[in-house]
Image (tube, rainbow, N blue to C red; front, side):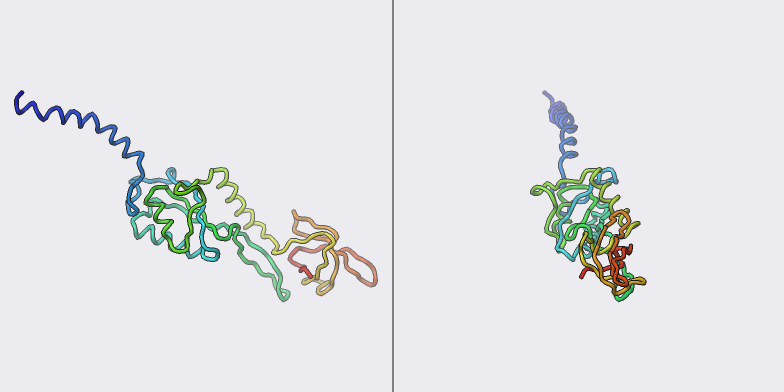
Length: 219
């Protein structure tokens, strides 16, 4: 065998093994915590995950996570980061007040392309305790679960909830309107309209008065 023939066999073997090696590389996640996301990552590659945080630190975690992803050149691996909230209404001192209340205190929703590197970016963010899932393999939300959560957020924004929920026969004090400071007893509750009927004593007689949830408070 001539010297010219000797290199041809290993070259041929390497060429034959190359497609299999490429397939293995495509399936394997990045090994290092700082490995960048695969080029060309798109929204189709991302899924929604629930991340557990210290309660009260959801906004800080959201901002810090975004900053860390950009600093580690992992920005393309992350999409939206959401903290689902609802608007609640209450009256204080005769004034109407609206406030934001979290649906899931201590949790945020992160849209991301999962990989070892992305997992470490999230897990090592201050005030994050971990993913919702089993071990180091977080479970993504299904599209149906995501749609329900987002629909719930939109509904809550369009129709603010009262801060308190009332029950029949519960004593209450009226805090707004012509019967301000009157006390009465809840006779009926309409959850669809966020109203209730309160029996109030006027001139010695029990009289039903219809009020918004935001116009009364518990005694």
